[in-house]
Length: 323
Image 1 (tube, rainbow, N blue to C red):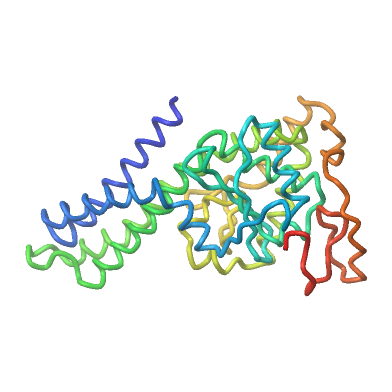
Image 2: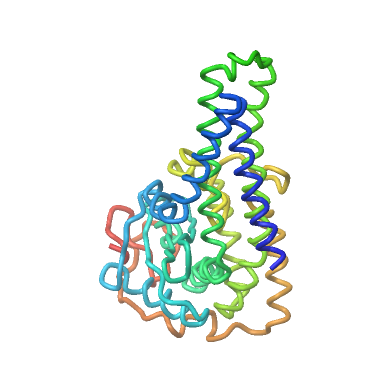
């Protein structure tokens, strides 16, 4: 309950920040307009933020026909988590990553990058999916998606105020106006980080319990971190307000575990999972391979690609098992 209260207060602070920027731009009338816009943004985010985020990242829906292995894995893990089967999406992006969204477990979606599917063995894919299902079960997805929507709106409002020079009619100091408009997006970013960072450790722990294999998720995090450093996610760079939704920060250049990092440091998350693995004992079902059917895909043919969750990664130009 304390976590939800803290998140509610953080969202209220973000709404207040939105109103304050409106006041800088248009005085009292600007505050009223901004408050109305903030309320409308919250309402819109409640109903549509999940679809908007999926659209930002060009996510494509898939089902059991297009991605049979991934679908069966997700269905089994959702059953372990006591959740309904979420909608499943594929993002054609080389950077390995994934995120979950949706306002409730019944309306949830999990989106997985093709870079993740091409580079990870089954136990690691299962760990990532289980982590995202943990976010859904903890009802983090609505909060994180609404925060992304509000942060983007604050950034746009601040840019609008910077363009028009603040509240000139009321004689506001232009330097103060510029400072507010520069600091407002940073304030929104801090709220995003506070929400995301406080929930990633819990999602790691719950995801390890759902998959029964903390080491699978720990190894996945290591591989995801390496993939983030070697592959630029263009959609995430274009929409940085959504960065906190991913299992690993998709943005380039943020390698610190400090104030402006969207996620806890990966090595700290791995250490926590290794400790949990010692407490839980051997993985259930030998890394979950027992419930991942074989597809009979041919070897990759010397492409040098790392094995994927379906036995072998397909050649780069060939369609994968997701469609």
